[in-house]
Length: 137
Figure 1: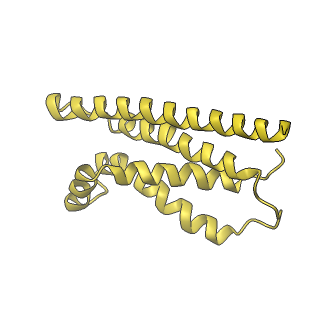
Figure 2: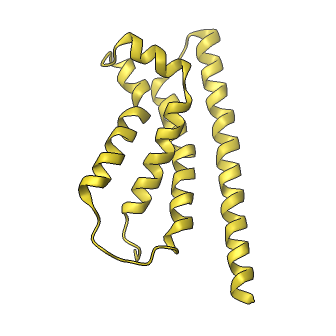
């Protein structure tokens, strides 16, 4: 009974962490995007760091949640890791790529309109990095 209560408490802490990261990250990102739309004073590095830290943090918390559920300790699949992580990193850094002029204008406009792509890519990036770490650190 005590281990079940510990598990419920642990999951509740993870849930609170996810809610706090989502709320603070959304607030900061909306503030930065509003300033970018009104003042045209945009810092692409700050707009990139906020989703990676806060929404990537959600991915890390999700990785921590399933870490105890993994049974096997087999070798990490490097090609699968790169196949998931590299596109997530590229999309997460899209505002920086656009500030350097490395993105086509139509792609950049699509990412600005659909800003949830960067958020989802940041969650995937955090989760995949957390899942790549060995179970015992």
